[in-house]
Length: 206
Image 1: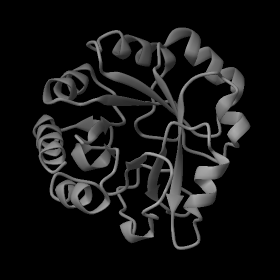
Image 2: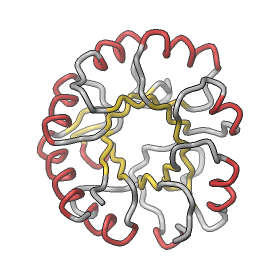
Image 3: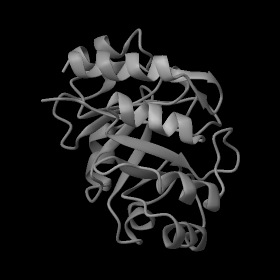
Image 4: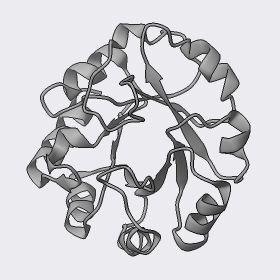
């Protein structure tokens, strides 16, 4: 099975095109004001209009007000919602859109319970647990904490780079890998060469 690749935290058109040209399956757009990769609704709408066919637009939210998410959905044609906070299953499902739920993993995380609770999710995005930060930290977690019988597609995130993504794919066999800081020059600014390396190494290892 060919692993899918999502490049998250897109803020510029040139990064969007670099990712698409390199073979990205999905791009992530961040609607969380505390993130250095945060986009306004208008900026996100302009970027998503430049996506070629068959590349998914994913909107990332962290404990956002439902009215704000609705306003994003009215202006930005998102294919998938990504919830990165303390949202309940009902919070995620209320918009009638396909969604994935991010889970920050440490030794106390019951991923089988998470999969059962978020049964309606298309998959679980597994990220590193860092106190007070919902994601995008560049930290890696212990992949052995992922149960082999997890009944949801795994989107592996957290500390992935062009240097370790091949190992990650070979060891975890995830449905997809997700990267943001691992392909950046600085926060919110991507490196086209790193993106191309990351995607090539991920797909060659699957």
